[in-house]
Amino acid sequence: MKLAPVCVIGAGSWGTALAMVLARHGRDVRLLARTETVAANMTQERENRDFLPGIPFPKMLSVTADYNDALADTAATVLAVPCAAADSILKTLEPLHTPVIAACKGLNPDTLERIDELLIRHIGLERTALLSGPSFAKDSAEGLPTAITMAAPNIELAKQCAKLFDDPAFRIYTSTDTAGVALGGALKNVIAIAAGVAAGLHLGHSAMAALITRGIAEISRLAVACGGQPETLSGLSGLGDLVLTCTGELSRNRKMGIALANGMSIDNARAHVGQVVEGEKTAIAACKLAKHHDIEMPICETVQSVLLGQIKPGDAVSNLLARPEKSE
Image (cartoon, rainbow, N blue to C red; front, side, top):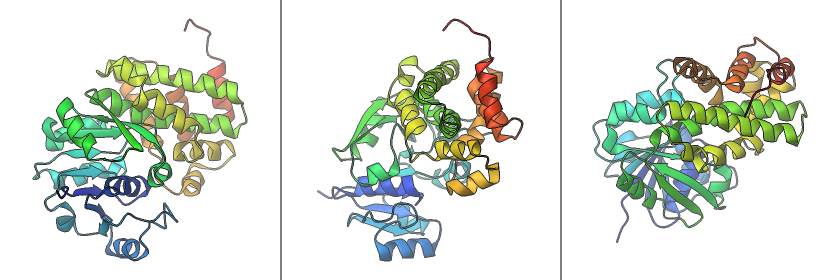
């Protein structure tokens, strides 16, 4: 029996990796690139040389820049683009009737919408799903073991979307806590910038452990205030993703923090990373959202101050350490 095709929108590192996972076991997967040139190059080379060089595509993976071809008769669409681009793309998906699985992590700095709220606004509850958790694109593309969360307002939809990824190395747990999963995925990027600063300043493993622990406390406070479940934040899409992004060498947000700690300007740090750093815009949105809910988030506030050039990374650490001692 032929498996229904899936479209993946976004031919960056994560979109490409997810397309490869989906295509490994006989499913027709269409990866939608931004331009005909990019699509043609990837088709000819049978790999994504810009982001995942040396990892060959499965035979069932095709690349196109044609929206109509990519979306025709698909079982679902995976959205793997920077959050800033998601709004405009979702408008084009409104007429369809199949699920949209958001694989992007962030908050809208203007509307403060989570990615699940953005999907619900455009396509409705019955088509909304999120894929989030501790996963580097390179690991997934190479077929290394990964455990991740698929969340949807309806558990049956979450299970349906999870079954599309028929790969034993890509283990999916399901959830109905879209708020918790969305905020865990978004806010960990902000904490990871702080972790990069700590790494760049050579503050040691003890400081990193403290930062991760206090970081998940901040994330949990805000997520619960927004309707998320505490247990979600102790799972894969919360603590799991935070640990990976704060400690893994492939983390873009951590890489930016290291660059800032080494004295680079914001613009130079962006160029050094070379890809979108979602934690930048999310830091601003997180601080606004925290203020709205009267939630204290000192790490996120400090990261925002560093990104805005209001304080230097070294002074930011001193300011956090100088906070009054309190009960945990």
